[in-house]
Image (tube, rainbow, N blue to C red; front, side, top):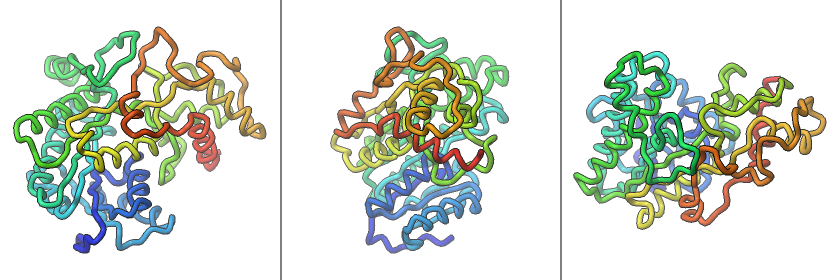
Amino acid sequence: MLINKDIRKDTVLITGLNGYLAGRTAELLLHEGYRVRGTVRNQKSGEKTKAALLHLGYCAHDIDVLEITDLCRPGSLDEAAAGCIAIFHLASPLAEIWTLPPSEVVRIATESTARALGAATRANETMKSVVLMSSAAALFDMPMEERLYTENDWNTTSEQLVKQNGDEAGGFHAYLASKTAAEKVFWQFRDTYRPSFGTTTLQPTYFIGPPLIPWETAANIPYSNTDFWKVVSGEDIPGPMMIYGDTVDIRDVARMLLWSALNTSQSDGQRYICSSFVGGGQAIADILNRRMPSQKIQRGQPGQGYLPDYKPRAGISAFDASKAASAMKEDWIPYEESVVDMARFLQRYL
């Protein structure tokens, strides 16, 4: 697709437009009066996102979809970034962590980040901000310590494990290493070149909340939402999530992305953990039994395994997102609202 050169509205570039977070981010940008330019590896997937946005009433004129099959190619994002005020680099080799060698996952993550920064530099006449979607995975080593992690923490071991163990490092460490290495590339660029645009990274925990585009089948529901599906579908109440229990609604992460781009005097050079609540299967079941009593939800052990305010319990591994909440000066979407919205969305798979 040809890029629309009409930039009377400010344009924001989103890499990985077809992703879980990206759809809601595009929706927010359009709602706030921006144009969206999104990259995808496959044009068809991008057009699905565009169609969903058009269905919500947004204008085709304000949405560009660009197929870029290899973000790691030198100059891959230069044309896409031209005329944009911000880049939200959301594309990440997540699905590939189980199929590609760990070193290749790290290469894709780091090189695509470098290409986004290079494109932003060449678009410096209009570029105001680049926001990298990192991950809470860049904050901790395994096993996790039983404490609150902050933006001062880093994963210090996964990159070395990938280098030492090669394919034997496995997909989990491939993911941790890729997120950590990509963020290091990002900050090294800032330290070296001191760009005119703002630079910010976000470290979200497990994503929850309804996506813009339904997953093809229930089997495609991502791990972070499997507790919701198990509860909604009437299965036994699931146990704790893998590694940690913190979650964040993707609509909150979208708000944090936009806030970061619009407030570079505060966000430049900063990391922000995005994490709102710790619920889990029993909390989800209790909420739905109370808020959606007609659903066939198992009762489990009501009230067990979580706090009434859905905050982290003492003595567990969790994340401190007070910095982001204080910066935005807005509350996170209430956990019960996220749960009910997600449950209603999942009804289509029953």
